[in-house]
Amino acid sequence: MKILFAASEGLPYSKTGGLADVVEALPKALVALGHQVSVILPRYRGNPTAPIFLPSLTLGFGDRLRFPSITGGGSKNGVSYFFVDDPEYFDREQLYGVNGKDYPDNAARFGEFSRAVVEFAKRGWEPDVIHCHDWQVALVPVLLRTQYKADSALAGVPVVFTIHNMGYHGTFPRTVLPELGLDPNLFRMDAMEFYGKVNFLKGGLVYSDYLTTVSRKYAQEIQTEEYGCGLEGVIKNRADRLHGILNGVDYTVWSPEQDTLIAARYSVRDLTGKRACKKDLLELFGLPTKSAQNLDRPLLGIVTRFAAQKGFDLLEEIAPELMRLNLTIVALGAGEPRYEKLFRDLAARFPEKVAVKVAYDNTIAHKIEAGSDMFLMPSRYEPCGLNQIYSLRYGTVPVVRATGGLDDTIESFEPRTGKGTGFKFQAYEPAPLLAAIREALAIYSDAKAWRQVQLNGMAKDYSWQTSAAEYARLYEVAKKSRNRKALASSN
Image (cartoon, rainbow, N blue to C red; front, side):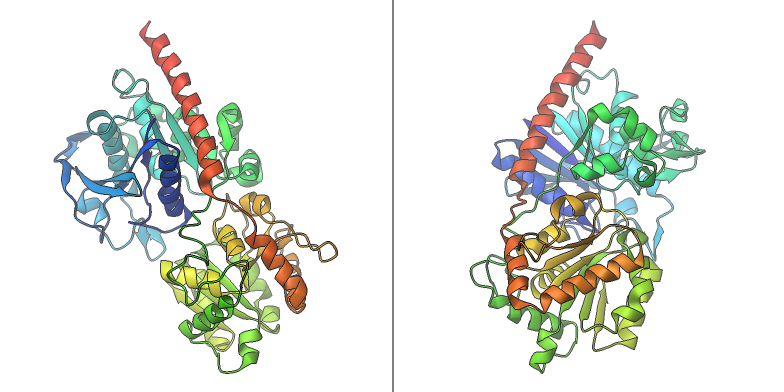
């Protein structure tokens, strides 16, 4: 089967979050199953120049025309890469915005990208199925089922749409419809209207053939008012087309046995190298390492977007009590200024206990996974989460809130039986978070019990093989369903 992935970011070319990891790893796993896969991305600043594949697409937007090109990025791990190249829209400092604010023309940027994806599917690389990811490419199914509805080349091509995070909609003023050359009739409740605005994500949910999200529990959660972000009714109406497929992990990249970015390699059979990784991590962040006491102190790692979703309002409330505990914290991330300031202030007040790097840095992320004793994810909600799965393989014990994929992948450790892989708390409140951290610290003080919880986690297998096979089966179902619809409409 020929599968086209369309996304706003993907490793090794661009990343702000876990979406980029999935867009790299899942295509590779599908290729290993015998499928032919291409990935199309925007060509951002810093991406390599590449040969022209389609020199100039003529895209109509109301009374305007734009002329992006499609460049070929070659092949990596059997996956072919292509880029939509328009420097005015994509050659910018960041992917989506700067200083915590979205670029004001994001509707136009990703409207153009979506239209270019459709034209590429028609003229450049004719797929059997298009797999779209998040609101930035949600106009692909909208366009296919409206403006391109009568196009015989595309009528049989289904769209599988993955919701990586229900909290990001892509909402814009009603005026974007004519500006993007879209039918004004889409501004209605059963299409793209959302509380007086145009909602790109809603369009993707309504017009795609099948919907997936990135864990089984999150597929259930987004049908509730608490997690549906105002779109729970749309999801409920399409529940028969919704599948929760847990994200996998690429263990060729995220494994302490093979990792080339960490100070020392180690494995479930020999954890010796983990201490060297811890020392390297402390030194990297400028934290004390001279005495064994400093190295023995429990080290909590954080790699994330600094956003309210990630539970940092809870962390802010317990910070005074947390700083009285015998622990060290290293954090890597960027995002909302409030939380960047939170970590900077903690690092300034407690320079021997807290250190932060406000950045996205893949190498440092690997070092945190390998060098930390625990990994903290107190999320308000977490569709899947990847870092807790990486942490398991690195013997870095997760402390998480029981939500979404965190709940699906982490089992609470039970000292009496020796079973479990981490520590979880239920209620989204400061006290349960602090209690979970205290529980983890108590087990850490018992070397035998701590080694057991580490080994339990390292033995878990969340590779992409199983998830990729689930997606492949869904693509086949979507293709058959779309072919029946196309045949019915032609008769």
